[in-house]
Every structure is written in C-alpha cells, then in structure tokens.
Amino acid sequence: MSVLGMSALSFAAVALLTPLLIVALKSLRLTQPIRKELPAGQQAKRGTPLMAGLILIIGVWVTLVTQDEPLARLVATAFILFGGIGFLDDFKKAYFQNPDGLSGKMKLLLQFIATGWLIWEWSRLSPLDPSIIITDRLELALPSAAYIVIILLFIVGTANAVNFTDGLDGLLIVVSIPTYLFFFAISDRQEVQAFALIMVGCLLGLLLYNVYPAKAFMGDTGSLAIGGSLSFLAVIEKMEIIIPVLFLVYFAEQLSVILQVWYYKRTRLRLFRMAPIHYHFSLKYGWKESKIVLVFGAVSLSSAFICWLYVLLFFP
Image (tube, rainbow, N blue to C red; front, side, top):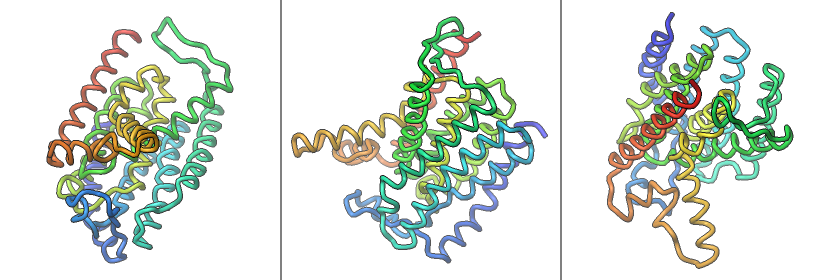
C-alpha cells in the first residue's frame, strides 16, 4: 500500500471510529472540567468528552503494521510514551473532575524519563551526531554531553509547548498538520514519511469532531503525543537550526505563559489579558474561535513553507 493509501486508511478509520469513542467516554463520564478563570465561551464546553486523542493510536497501529523497521517502532514508541503521560493526566482530571490533573513536577519527571530512554534507544540505532547542522557545508560542533542535554530539554519543552497550544476547538490539529507535512516533505527515510503522512490522515479524521463546536477534546493524551513525536522527528532529521521557525506557534504559546508569569510576579499586572496567547486575541480583540484557529493555522503553514524552502536552498 502506498503512503497516501495508508494516510487515507487512517483518515477513514479515525472518522468512522471516533463517534464510538465519544459514546464510550460519555458513558464513562470522562469529560472535560473547565478552569473557573477561563472565558465564558470555554465554560460552556464543560462536560465535553475528554481523551479523544486515544483514537490517534490508529495511526501508530497503521505505522507499525506497514513499517516493520526499528526507526518506525521508535517513533511510534515516542508517540505512545508521551500520549500515555497525557492519558494519566487526563484521566485524573476527568475522573475527579479536577482541571489540575497530575502535578507539574510529576509530568515533567515522567517526560524526562521517557525522553532519556528515547535518546538512548536512538543512539543505539544511529550514533548521535553532537552538532547543530546549519547548512550542508556548515555545522556547529558541540560536546556530546551538552548536545544530549540540549535535545533532552528541547523534546520535553516542545511537548509542553504543543500542549499549551491545545486550548481552542481544532487549534492544535490545524497548527500541527503543516508541521507533520514538513517532515513528510523533507525526509528521505520511508518510516518518517509514512508516520508523518499517516498522522496527517488521523488528524484530519479527528478534526471532523474537534472543529468548533467540538464534540470531543483530544486532551493531553493527544497533545503530548503530538508534541513528543514532532520534537523527536526534529531530532532524527537534524533540523535543530530551523526549529524556532518551524515550531513558531507552539513556542509563542509557551513564551506567552512564561512572560505572563514573570511579568505578574514583578508588577502584579498582566501582560496579556490571558495566557496562552490564543485567549488574549479572544478577550482583547474579540476574535472568534474559528478566526484564531485559521490565523494560527496560516502562521504554522507559512512557517513550515519557509523551513521547506530553507531545506531546499541549503540542503540540496
């Protein structure tokens, strides 16, 4: 089966099976608790089924069935490990109807353990190249220990940045599809191409139920899995130099939270009406949810296109 066929199969499976998952989540009362400080529009979403990101495991299954290679298994494992951490967080939120979920320290600890193991396994498949490749003729050599620390922090940080982006109906899916397409376009590894396009098919299938007004939320189960897999793909493909541009939306969301906390501690004032920054556009400028999703999606698509051009020009 061609890669496009696998992507189409994943789309169809997710589109057909998600309604069954939604019914199951409702019957188990695994629904989204909403923080009191969120806008009124978000309060209305209380009771929406959570953990719909579980359906994305279909993409992992299709990848493993069609790509029986160590790298495919490792990328799928990255998705499952981070998704599993997100599942634990979501389950605690939904079961106890407490939006706090796992403690931040526990989530970070589990993510660092998972990332450390992934880096170890990747180094066994392919010796780590401790350098930042700028062009095909220019690179910045780093001590091995420093490089490992950098990619460890990068993977965990990116996974959480992607998690911050999952705050509006369809937002994370629309932002993530161009990023997966970028890795499909630039990779010369069949396993990476297959996984990336299969995930695009899965996300498009889930978008049918996650677009405004969402019938289900993917939760941390989906967002951490997406973040963990995308950051791991960036490490595999040695795309460190373009990460600030490729992951622009994710990092902007994360940076807005960091700046909000820092500014409030210093001044007792808020830099943004609310963080992550997608809420700021809603509260300050009155943007509708669908407009925010379209604009952020357009920024992500532009970022992916710029990075693709960079690869074409400097990695011929």
